[in-house]
Length: 288
Image 1 (spheres, rainbow, N blue to C red):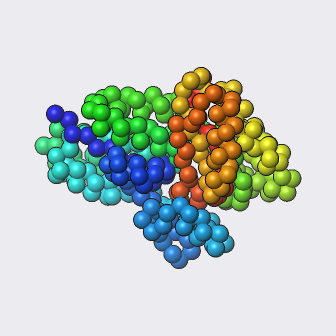
Image 2 (image 1 turned 45 degrees about the horizontal axis):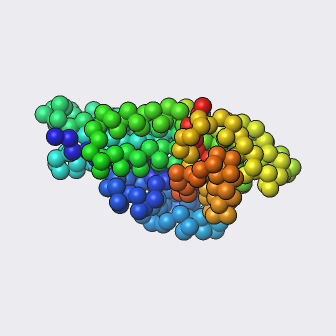
Image 3 (image 1 turned 180 degrees about the vertical axis):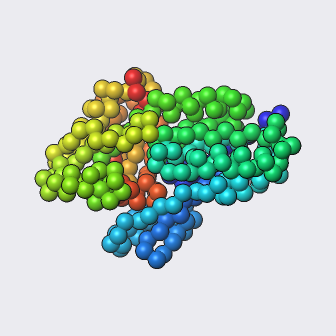
């Protein structure tokens, strides 16, 4: 009989409540701010991290989750009698974390050859960030409680990820420029002219999809673009940062255009805010 555990990393931005209620194993990114080092979700919650960002002149730096950390986790759950571990992890093009999870399993099997056919680890490359795979993690956790098989859960997660798109706007461009997500010159000009780049994340790639002049038009433009591309009737999620008013505005705009409410809202945590800035708003959806 299968005994299944879902695991993810803290860039999935699932809530603490979901982590606990669904018994998700969480791998937390480390964040460096000058000489200070922190562990996301352990040393601060989102609001506390936003406050730290406001007090820090530089750009927070994130570090990958190591193969050693994954191997330790595999050892723990193998000893506890789990047969299947299903991991949904941050975009492999943006972090070595996913690759480290694969390396760790090979190392684990070398040390425990007897486990090869009775302890399986499915590492899934999310190809994206934040709730784009956080939603798949939460739904996978629910499927475990419903008694679904590992095969069914993996198939669901891969299908969601394959068709998942994110549109979002960072309101402060300095973080995205420093992290390389937006060229520095373009970010500088955008800030000067009041132009906000609408970013698109799909299949590993972050690109500038279109530009929006003026903050007041951001929510409307993102909602309209999303609805023009999303598969009718499918779940969608709101992504936001330190401004709950933007979350509520996006929820209202999307509900009006689709006729139904979002399946949830994901507030970006330290690993994402360090690269996008604290103030963002967007929508996560399945493409048509």
